[in-house]
Image (cartoon, rainbow, N blue to C red; front, side, top):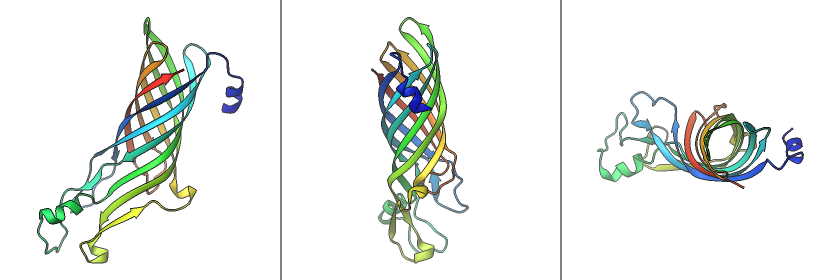
Length: 212
């Protein structure tokens, strides 16, 4: 359906490019007696899309974007039951990097939008839709005393096939349009599937979009 709409496009349809920054949060509770914490981590994104306008108010925009996410999961200190090691600066560095999950991926959002004019040269756009996600790479540092009985820090990289790296989710957007080309957008997204790498991670983004 999208391809059919694109090939039957009229002169009102437009390409756009956009970029910005984001913060992400892993929406889970820390384990009991754990020094883990789930805060917010910084990220960034860049993408391009094609806006299909049905009339002056309604449009549909499939996009392709490259996104980096840090889900903000860390530990607060070096501690575990039965530990004989002090909470010293020597070990604090390693514990602070525990459970820090950073991922690079490709997203394909498809957003249906409604826009209206506020004044001459100024408008608002509200949108909602779905996105598909495929992870390209990622890292996770963790401290595992109970299984390995040592004080080493381990690093995991994302592995697995296409299905292991895949996810889908919902996305919502609000934007302020200034003139014919620039808009300033706020976007929120959350995955449907509780996959290991991208489960329960909400991402809030601010960006700038330029339409040709």
